[in-house]
Each structure stands twice: as C-alpha cells, then as structure tokens.
Length: 175
Image 1 (tube, helix red, strand yellow):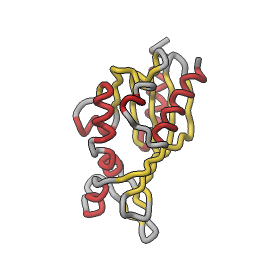
Image 2: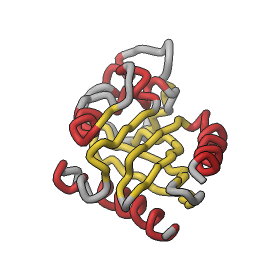
Image 3: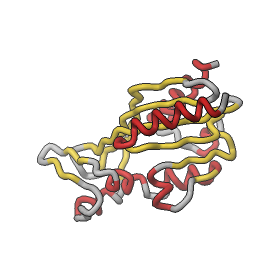
Image 4: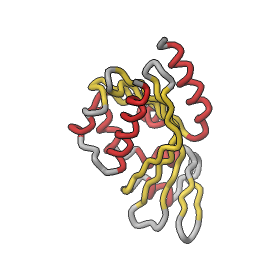
C-alpha cells in the first residue's frame, strides 16, 4: 500500500507538469472535501477547501504572491534580483502577473505509513516576458485515505525541517 500512496503523489505531479489541471481530472486524485493549507492560506485567512477551493488556489492569481512572500530569487540572464517581504518594487509587481510553464520536480517522496506522505520538491515557473525562471524549494505533507488526497499542507523552504517533523508526528498520531 505504501508504494501506491507515493505513486499517487507522483501521478499528481506528472499531471501538474503536463498542464492537466482540469477540475474533472483533479477528482482522480483529490477527495471532494480536500483541505489545502500552507503559506497562501495565511494570506487568505483559511485553508482552501474542496475541489472549488483547489481551483481558486490554482487560478486565483496568488501563486506569485507566495514566491514574493518567501523571498524567492528571480534569475534572469541579465541579473538576479531578490524579491520578498518589504521589497515591493516593479519587479515584485510583475511576479503577481501571469506566469506559466510551472514545473514541479520531486527530490524526495516518503511514505511515512498510516496514510501520510512527505515530500520535498523544487517548483519553478517561467514568467511571461522574462528570460529566467522563478524557483522555490518546498515541502508537502499529504494525508491519503481510500486512494485520494484528503489533506495537503505546503511548507516554504525555511520550514522543510518543520514539515518533516510534522509529517512524522502526524503519522504517529494516525496509528
């Protein structure tokens, strides 16, 4: 069973990378009452809930805000510019614009048993009109029941160790 949970997460990542983000396709992976929390939930004030919440998260235009809030570096062929809290500029304003070619590359996916999968991944996106990519390492904790993700928690790079500890504790609590 543990390999099936990791396989499910890998399939979700592959689907994301192929730009297959259709709500009907999401239902293959996500429990109808899924709860997504992480840095963006703190912006909106509450977790994203259900497939409609996931759609709002994906298409609500807040993805670039996450990059800006976490102090991500934008790499271009001309320069590297820091973007983050307290550094609002024309460059960070452009981060809130459209971006595409979002790719997730999993570095580590571990089934911690009891329905808990922990992962560390690199997410990158191509900003429209820019030569470079925005990159950010993140961690995620997925709770999987009956073959569907019912809870997904995203952690920024600065909290990867916290994410690992939280995932291990959650797996113990679910014994």
